[in-house]
Length: 395
Ligand code: NAD
Image (cartoon, rainbow, N blue to C red; front, side):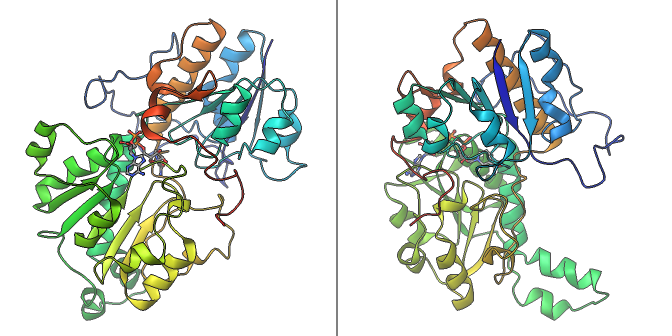
């Protein structure tokens, strides 16, 4: 019998929905490039329903209790007296979502001697101190690709929203105005701009593919160069450093994981080397950007706009400066948790758990840390080390 502690975001303020805007979500055959979707033996939920909140339980309760395991689901995750920290002490498995991260710090790992598996319901496992997981022999797995396309759609939406000044224009309508000059004095076309991505993995390359029809000049940097035919097909320019990339871009989108190489990457110096009036869209992780450097650059006009859905910490405090800074298009961390994405990552979590309990290998694509080292997707996209100290701000 295993104890599984699952940390999910709170239910909607009016309770779990009883009716949804649509009756179904599209059924996908494969991910781009051929990776297969999750393949659990069965599902105990209806795709398209809210699974990522506490009452949704990722659709796992019947399955886990049917095997005799104990499932604890909570949104109470921060501080030493939180339900998460109390329940962690005898847990074998922790499940958490990046949208509402249960920061699994080295301290917390030390308090959980039975902990063997940390599953990210989604993508991006930086809320786990990966060095502590490496040192402690804890397996870390995530549902690779489950929401990469979801995020790429959000990135394209935010690029268009910022450059075309959509949000202020919408607000003029809501306020009863018809202030065309106010709306358009910050509005441009994306056509002809230079757009670059930091990271051209699953999300970054999907953003590039989606932007190609907008007739923009596409650039990227990544520690792995894309195949020649992809570069040719999309007309990509490769940069071997982020400095070289940002110097030529009008719009930069960040799609690399948070790890020691990327933490604090967008600081005053790097932002200062961008073209005046550039835009940044960051749906990767909040700590890749220096919080106050972003605010300063928006105030000075060095940046014309900043949007994204990732913050530090999460949930962001009500006085977080990104809520009120100039020319921003921030949302809470939602891009990867559409109802469509939830169905995929809930199925992927179930697949990982089935593998775990049946002592079958977890797919390599899902592994971040295994056997005391970065493994699978983690070895490809992360560097070892303690990127974040879990819940502490970047020094
Ligand atoms: P991926 O592993 O397919 O791609 C990540 C890419 O980043 C890889 O190609 C890797 O080589 C590259 N990279 C790593 N370090 C780099 C560096 N220093 N400079 C440039 N490139 C570097 O992962 P993905 O599915 O594309 O997701 C990327 C990240 O996006 C996740 O790790 C996560 O942090 C974030 N994400 C956010 C959401 C959301 O809801 N906002 C959802 C999913 C993922």
